[in-house]
Length: 621
Image 1 (cartoon, rainbow, N blue to C red):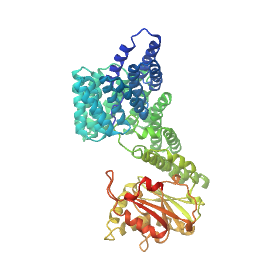
Image 2: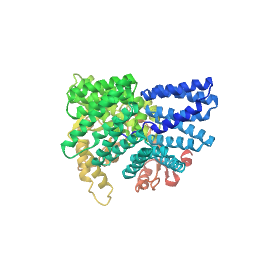
Image 3: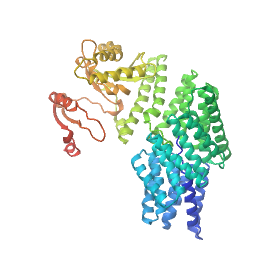
Image 4: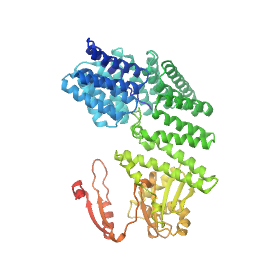
């Protein structure tokens, strides 16, 4: 689903008219600034967003040096829109925060309402929903009080976007409906088409497919009557993408929607080629390729995908390029071309890395609400899967080791990004630069890297001598179901119902590698689990007679590159044990934390900070 989030046309036209009024002065400095604003406007309309941002940034600085605060504020709205269009969501928010502060100092109520509404819309993209809602509702109330139905309609569209991200579909559709009504009342075809597109996409996401079809039909009718431009082409892409999301139970309407999606993408492509709009061109080609891929026409899909990738390179759009490289890899893989597929997947990962933080916000898509792992994780696992398959047919042990290491490192990259996003901090990158292999520290330690894949589970065991690979014919879904059952039964302390799952998981994950561990005199296992496996204590796996912890020391780490392993003199170990067991910030209580800390305490010299005692002040001491 794609929510239309390009800068709203009504707000842009309002800013443009206000700027024209402000700049109609015979002044050389103002004339230069006016030229920059107009230049940026032309670039933006042609999809050259980076150029538009550069022009408008210069204009903002020029107005600031002239002391022309009103023109600076209005141009800042343009600038933020350009940043949003190239995926720099946080930068857009910073620009609007500054503009709002300046607008409030002017005391101009209408200007404050305009900037506040655009800041609220921008905050949707940075997932700051609470503040976004507050700003949008405040600005909507102000617009209604001022009887400014144009701005009110635009704000209702943005409010609908926010509610859609929160899965409040009924409220979202109501907001879009009000937006459409006000837009039609004001003969604002652009806002009408935009709100209808968003409403159709939201209805599809809510599973109201007939309603989505009806709304999308109206949206396309409105869009057809618009002037040819980047904004119109973007709406056509949105119509096509929504048609792909609508699912009917019989084939006839489905075929009609596929045809309509093809036509929408083709129209968008024609607009893009006339105006040399490369951003629209890359998506029109890429989306068309996806339709052919779904229809099993891999040759046509591959040709279009390569054209889309070339257009993305020309437009310097890594946020699109990595998607088409990924798509290329997937298509080549489906044809059995493993080596070219791996090369394409590698390019996709390499292209994604520098922009991963922006992508995790949902590049240009306020409705995603998916984690980076859900959205982009398949890219990493699909590449790892291919590398592991290739390792089986490697000509020599050196090549096999290289492929196994690369597969492990690819999954490790995903884990690092997950933690960066979770902590909202790049400290993981710093730590990764210091990391070295855990298994290299102690020859009696083995690292067990578990990679659940759709049709099998891969176990990579790291020893000082290298990596050993084991495969279990068990897909991720079946493994996850057993793990969740094990977890539930473990929490029932009055029975031993968990033992059946403990033994089954032992048979799947430990028994295949047990001989290798014995042959190498392994005393310690370090598990690097993934998915649902992160939720269970591996020490409690059972071979039918004994728990794993009774035979081997067991440790768990979220990732190999996130720790700096070194040997510790056990006699000098002193532990700081920290825990929170009480409910806080909406989280459920952790009932067994206190008991777990008490059980660890006698084993080593330690100090415990629990609940109220676990504060920043006590931690610093």
